[in-house]
Length: 424
Ligand code: HOZ
Image (tube, rainbow, N blue to C red):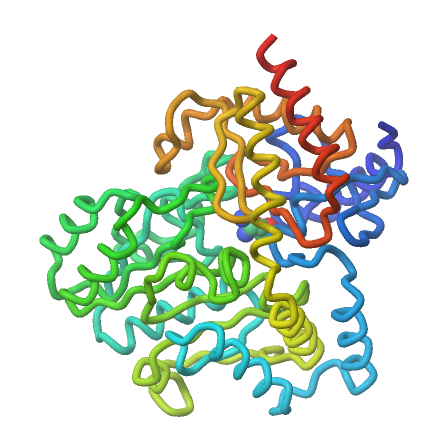
């Protein structure tokens, strides 16, 4: 595989940006190579600056559920651009998108549009603290909720691969109210409520974890979080930045049948543009300024171009009632190929992760038993075979509607070959 152009671009980039990247998980450091620079992408394919073509299973880390440059989204964005890139003022598109979000997520009676998943989660937590008048929050080891200060504690995603579970630059006083529980471990949650019965504002959780690799909730775990938070007057926040419109048109809450008090959405809801949202029960959302005393704002919140992409994406989801069945059928194939190749795998819908461990991966600790050198070898074999997966163990592989049967067959074939080589 030729990488001369990417290498040259990287040499320029490292002088200008930390690690040459604008987000650490793109850096390819954990798979022992320099990042590829992308030129363009279309459908299920991504093309780098050297002209290499890959079947893409990163899908921009989740948003591209219909693949890249999906014509109805591109058309909607083009039309919106012609009307102006940003107004910093109200427009009808915001209402249309809010109506759609609320129709799909009945637990979100009111919604606020923001620009990134980090912002959505950070604001939802502020709302929970404002509403309850309490300071403490519970988060789970290995869950990642963006890079807001109080949540960069025992985080997943790039924090695990870069072995900095607790980021530098955050005063201890900023995280002293962050309590850590173990994913899928009810007792670790009840112990915290026993210790701080009146002090916990909320539990924040990825209802299906996808930032320590994919780790599904055990049966009854989400129901337990629902029950215990209610019992102690704390709110339950689902971080559905990855799972929203991914596991079903009503996210993980519809998929698992458990509702949250507040929900954070990102990625798919913005159709590939910088847009995210948080929302929940009316009485909680009425605490947000200008109705209430919890402040949150943004020049680009509800940006008309991003909103147009979001509306086009949710419209396409509504027009394709078999979308999630198709994704399920397609995604079952790489899962089967991994099993056949002796690779441990967790899959929920169109999210899956290959783990190189004999242990069942049910939490952060078991996820960390995966052999990362083997993951790197697996990644590099696939990349050299024209298949682009996450350059990090602790992420998901995203299957999109654009992946053809042929793409999937080629991928399965290469996964099986990778498995054979790794077992030799
Ligand atoms: N939050 C995503 C990782 N699971 C991707 C965004 C990033 O960190 O660059």
